[in-house]
Length: 192
Image (cartoon, rainbow, N blue to C red; front, side, top):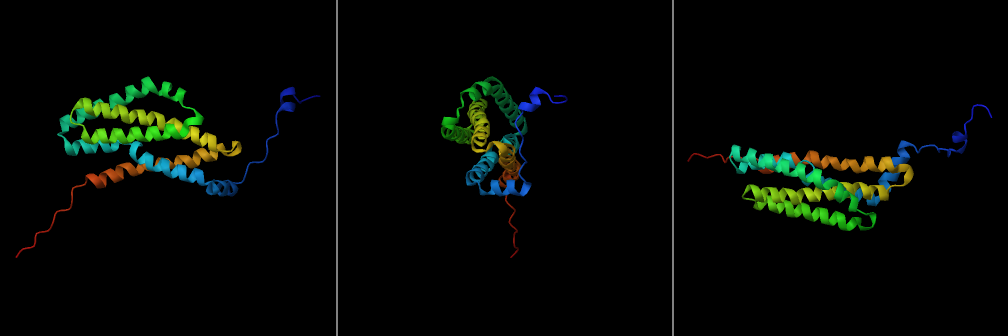
């Protein structure tokens, strides 16, 4: 046969892709995906942009020199922890234990936040950051592994796209922090 290679003859036929509206209906009807995306959005409020709420918090609670020193140490601790441990943690994540991994990652976030609130020295700040970073290193790959397990083969990209709506939590984080750190409005004094 002229013009037909052996590889193209054996390639599986690709079906017609679903319409955009049908894909949206499928995503809308997947309750597990919707609940998981909402959970990820709330989780991302906490860990999505942690530097955007830690730095204003430090500036409000410490003098600027100490706040900058602490923030530099926290960013270094976060980066070093991720560089040294991300691959090892990612290797041990398994589909069969996803619930436990997500629960443990969330628990590490909680312990890290409690550590931030109680930290009074540079070492205690760094220990809290290490614990928080461990939670981060577990949650990110576990979320993608969960979506990969949940998604049908032909809609995997759409499921990942829907789950990425959770990134809106990272945009909400600085806004919420700004409102929480904003000084209360001054009371107007009424003259007698």
